[in-house]
Length: 188
Image 1: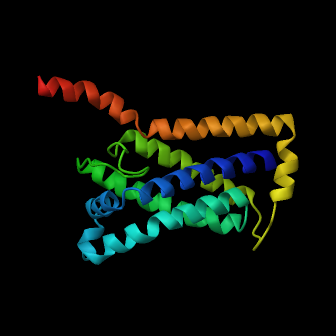
Image 2 (image 1 turned 180 degrees about the vertical axis):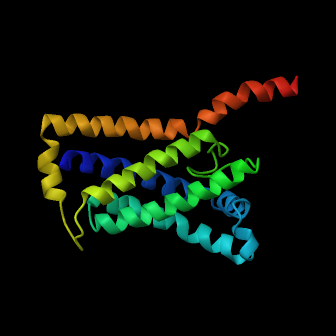
């Protein structure tokens, strides 16, 4: 079980680091996306405020997942963010609205079944960490993680986790594959 916790931490940490880092490069697109998700209904300042704090917040979550500090609290915060994003996506998709999610910067595809599936996998990872981690305020498992990484089984699980990370990035773009042929037929 500790090996799977380590893999879940690594995958979630890498995803949040990638997501937060890519949002720094596309702040104007992020403000527009936040407005499209509906935060603009609460005033023009809220999307700008969220766009300012979302990237560093995601980077912080990623770093905390990787370090293992306050794991339960971090998993709860990530779970809350992912539930919010997933519900907003689901509501817009149900209404037929499609726009770029900016989940991984301005190059991200439109919201769709791929981004929903990616979020469900990430939600499952957060729930797994919540169920399997004890309620501790501060733990520093870095030394134990380094020792576990020398175990071949753990190393294989970590490599599998890295593969899951790459697949999660690809799954979010799957709608682009299915949409491209239709878009080219409409243009003809």
